[in-house]
Image (cartoon, rainbow, N blue to C red; front, side, top):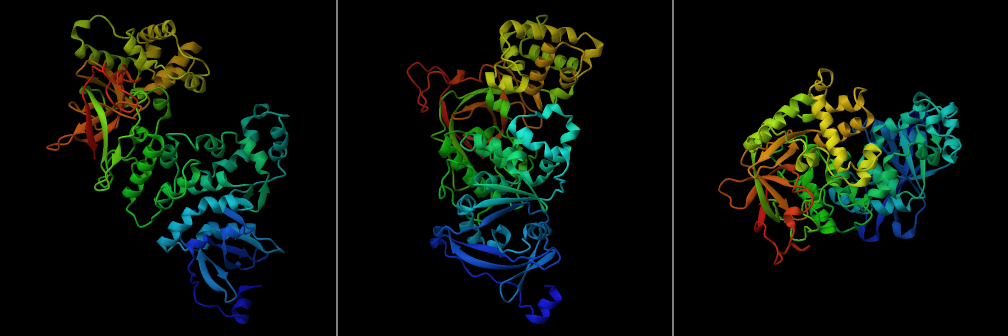
Length: 564
């Protein structure tokens, strides 16, 4: 029915007003989408149901996109106007059946987005909504031609009759294009797909076979998330990596993803300040995993005065570099059981050990951007500043230096990155001897590590070594300490001489902190560091898993400190 006729027959009532939901009855709203053809106006009915009654519905999963309302849908018998954004309008048009009513749960309409209290209790029900839905209908704003040969080959691919490598990469571009959509990066969408009983993928008005398409994209994030959902560190990784239009959704969306976090363990309150919500997530992380892994985040933006220095946040564009965590256990088996976040000021208190102080700081540019000869010269200058009596004896074959550049990652990390096991001692020395030779060869010494790893100027073993060193030093710069240790820290950190190196209980890497003036035992977080000799619990030998010193402990005193 044309909109003009609707005006004439019914007239249009004022804009739609929500009736309240009863959270104690686990009530939600469902959208009944009236049948129609493309040019018809979108007419829906909202009904209130209880999840306890096992209602039958499908849940819509889509990318909100630009949120400015550009179109109208009409709700109920009185056709009350409700303004919606472009992506939702297009999704409803594509999902609408020509002859039958379709019952959907659509977050932008079924939740009163202007009522923070309702948003809070509806968010607590999200896991139940998506796991109760008969199917999750994923709408992706990508045009596809299902008759094209790549789509016809997907069934054979799923059955193992053909392999991806049987065809040129360009052949699969029409299929791969589906996964270029930013749809896949949104926090809520990860929750929606993970919790789904069944997924129907709509590429605009075309339905693609979800099993075939997800088999094709074997690195698709949903498959990874099934392995990550109960993984210490993954909660923080997802929080930092995914995006949401509403910053608070970084937390509340992820609560639905994590398999071992129950509803009610985190208070959902959209009225709380953002920093309190972020700190709430970190407090939950500490409680669940007894870990301070989140202190190893890498902020790209540090000028965030309203966010505590230690607190990872989307505003800082923080993220975790997994290879660092794979190769380190600086606090051994000691848990973060005694760490806590203060409700006033959101300071983080934790016990730890003061190990060393920063003495030298290298060039504030990533080592991996510099030619091999340049960063090797810089490293030697810093090393000989710490060890002046070693002049004339290059440090490159010393064990602690080999550990810094060719670190002892776990076997699975070596296999994932390099397709081989660990370098043994002889191999590491052979590799470093090669680097000393490259330093003298003009055609190689002017290259950076990645150029060596990806080029043809050295053999495959040396390429693997260059790649490992490049990933060890990626984004890093050199530091030297008062105790004559050499290490690396992220190049955009504010590290300076006098900063302190700490081992914090429950944190997998050494942490560099700066004492706050006139505030005893209070610190500003600077960043995590890689320092051979401190990476595998060496400083904590003699301390129990609960953080108590034993009779054989001979290290520095355990101190309770506070990070701001």
